[in-house]
Image 1 (spheres, rainbow, N blue to C red):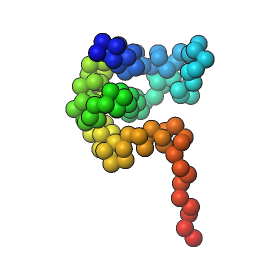
Image 2 (cartoon, rainbow, N blue to C red):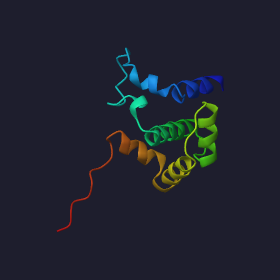
Image 3 (cartoon, one colour):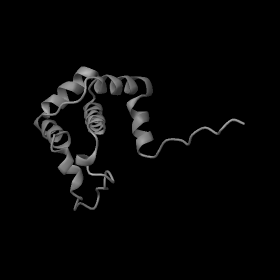
Length: 116
C-alpha cells in the first residue's frame, strides 16, 4: 500500500544519518543512539540498514530473506555489502524476529550464570 511505501521511504532512506542526528520534538520518541549515524562506520551503517529492512519486512508480515532485504534497501536508494542481508536473514531464521526484538528492547532474560 502507499502508506507502507511512505513509511519505508521515511524509515529506510539514505538520509538516515540526518534522521538520527535530529532529536525528536515528539514526547513519545526516545533518542535512538548516542552517536549520529553519519559518524558510524560503513559496516555499522550497513548493519543498521539491514536491521531496519528486517523490521519493516517483519512488520509487513513478509518473508525476511536476503533478496527481500536487498530489494528494500535498493528501493531506498542505499547499498550494503552483499554479506549483510545474508547474515541478518540467517540470524532471523535461526533465532526468530520476535526473540531478537525482545532482546533489543531489554525484555530478554538475563545471561546464564558462569560455571565454576
